[in-house]
Amino acid sequence: MKNNSENYRSRCPINFLLESLGDKWTLLVIRDLMFKGKRYFGELLASDEKISTNILAERLKRLEHNHIVSKIVDPNNGAKVIYSLTDKGKDLMPIMLEVTAWSSKHDELTNTPAPFMQAFEQDRTGLMAKLRFDLDKLTK
Amino acid sequence: MKNNSENYRSRCPINFLLESLGDKWTLLVIRDLMFKGKRYFGELLASDEKISTNILAERLKRLEHNHIVSKIVDPNNGAKVIYSLTDKGKDLMPIMLEVTAWSSKHDELTNTPAPFMQAFEQDRTGLMAKLRFDLDKLTK
DNA sequence: CTGTATCCTTAGGGATACTG
DNA sequence: CAGTATCCCTAAGGATACAG
Image 1 (cartoon, rainbow over the protein chains, first blue to last red):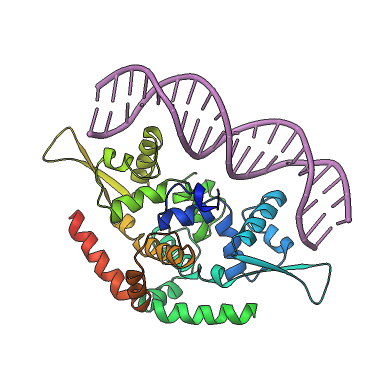
Image 2 (image 1 turned 30 degrees about the vertical axis):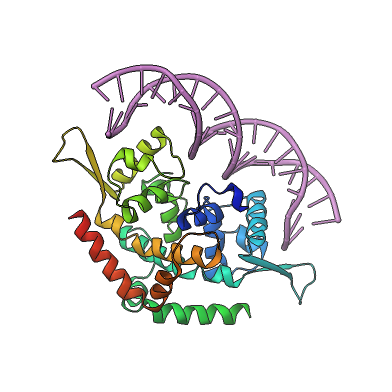
């Protein structure tokens, strides 16, 4: 996955996403930062899908390099690092919601509460705006 | 990439998408079927990104197995096969549009016309409904 | 035209030991 | 706790020849 434009396979927007986030793990890291309120390396490490340390470290590094995630030193504990989504990262929320909508519609095993998805289909714009507002508050 | 539920890494909807479509090529095939009006193997083969025959054949087979793509024999030419999106496949359109929106916002090299994306941000629901209608007509 | 089959290479990723 | 460094292995993917 390269990120300097000369190496893109094409200049298609779909392909742009694939080159930025198109692997087995990156989207899961973003999910955890966006919807599960995780902020620390250790928390991200503890996902159901069992990512390993080197992979997580590499993905975070690349996400930071792509300005999707930023890291700061925890003001309450200088030994800890806090990861959070940048605006560019938060802009991925509509994609994540649509993915969730699609999966919960087409995979009966998926664990998304149906009422929420129904509300979402009714009023995408409103719900997205609200969630974005919450997200901004959280990482402010 | 497994598709029988016992082998999922988790039952998260984000992960469901990754297990169904999470590789370097699948989303590009869907893009070509959804937005570029391609229907034949040869047409799909001719994308900018240069997919090879074996990969394309394998992806189409898996997409068919997952009920995202269906194939029929061309009624006008028995030697040809026509691929098209199922309803489940067409349901991916909102995701594709959000991906396009995100990429065209954050990658200046991306080739999506800005006016369209502006209209989309104004009225997601309306535009999605219209595009879905067009898509249904096309594959009817 | 629509694929299969094969060969080969590489990138991605698990496991795990180790460091500041 | 937050990573780095290695080792090793496998799956994914390019190239290309060939078949129905």
